[in-house]
Length: 109
Length: 243
Image 1 (cartoon, rainbow over the protein chains, first blue to last red):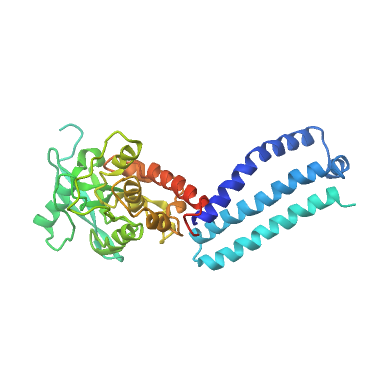
Image 2 (spheres, rainbow over the protein chains, first blue to last red):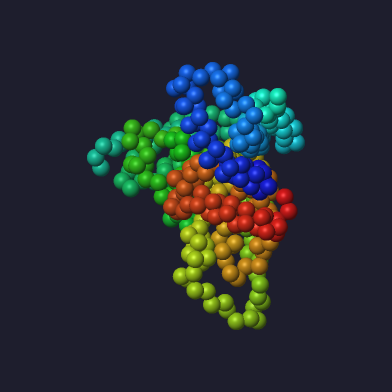
């Protein structure tokens, strides 16, 4: 890891810290209410605020986790940095697409 | 001596990277160090045993070995503290190539000092007046906290990140960089910040703090590396480092 990746990882961690707390609170609320995914979606549908909140969360997670995965790959597998970086980017894109799919369901008709 | 044995069972690594532990019986003595044990084996049992030492008093940093699975400076490690059951296993330092028996090749260790720009870059000549350094400034206190490194390689041998990442400069080289970064007489900080911000630099450290726990000089390389992370991050955000 170099200083550029370090700054990205720490910045996204700082962004995620408060978001995670709200996210955990939402999970507790939803599970205690026995809400299904459809129930949650029915309440959040069309909410720009929830979409923006989780949009930022998904973007931060995708960047943060990809950098972390890159470190794991370079330290634990005999991979060159460049190849580990490509796998990590693919992993980050996968996370972003999966997360963005859920956000799209909130805001798209 | 209470709780000691009259004879120690000492397993010593013999060979290079490939080799095996060979066991010797060594008489146990009062105030005996691990280096005394190795020296006994070499002087009285097997003169072909290779090991490295110089000062025998914890100054030169050349006698570090792996003792019962943990890197230690052998000249200041008393047998009574590490061989409660009367057995010692002594091997070469880990994370370094083995030349023979207990002797490791320290070249890569010192090369990384060079890579970390661990060399003093003078800003004055011998014709200038001697710099007056106040000992109570925050920078000097930070430099002094890491200045007593004896280059024994114990932190490097015990570092998990060095084991996983051969590019990682290691705790000793980065501590050296930290002391120079805080030395107001030094003029090499631009190149130093750049060097320790690259791949394998201070940001590779996982802050396991093994170096701090193992350092025979009771230094805290993890704290030095944390300081480097702060300084390099600030320099990067100011655009002083290209990454």
